[in-house]
Image (cartoon, rainbow, N blue to C red; front, side, top):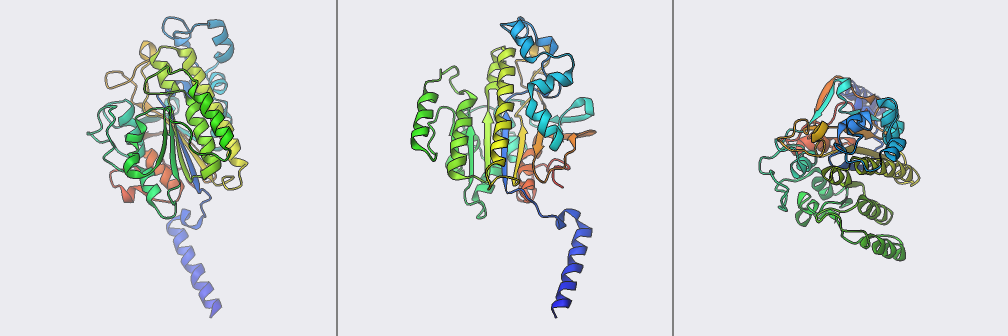
Length: 365
């Protein structure tokens, strides 16, 4: 009897594997970290420091000698590796990058506005909604993939967000979704060491209020680190904003510094996750952006009137993602981010939300 059952099981498994090769594989991903770098252009991601902006007039660079020493190299490949050592030293080797036009891979937004709330809605919900047309503090009428995950019994509410912009509680509809959202200058509430949390809060409170509605990236990074240690989320979203803020200030030097700091934080966070038994070998990382920016003198701006600011990019790294490096010969859209997060966890957001775009192709073996 046991022999017959074993044969039936083997035959069934073979049929399933023939129908869907992925069905025979066991997914290792149990955690996903989604990170967005507000308004960071594909030009820097794939080419490093832009030679057209290495000046005081267009780029607003204060100290050209120091800037060149830090960011300038002879080729685009050297410049991007200098600016983003984690993206190009780890993700490009072990994961995948989308959105490099020189590889005939274009990533675009589908919403017609090309600025923040519509972009965050599109990437978190999986589709554009004509009702989302301003950066207003209005609750998102649609469920994000994070809200859906947080409500599932197998996630037990272990979904949280850490954001530098004060509109995110509305984008994530925190009052409805129940997702923990640390936004802008909120004090850190969670941590294993009360004295360390109190010290961090004193330091963060001493930061200058340079922008009314946004703060420095270190705030979200510090809150995430404490929450990770204390609460062990299965899905975390970290939304960094300094790249967009400094670009609007026409400070290309500070824009690149913020981008490089974000890359360093990503590398340090990835290494820290691999040192935590619960996260080691079970965590996938998705990195993207809410919108692009213009080119040349329009690099500071974005929106429907700024050509090129509909162009975005993606990076994916994790135990189930084949190491394909820079993806070629395809067009992808911003809305594919939401389904990709679910897909890496073995779930189907498109079945739950038919308007959502499908996952990025080939990101899960």
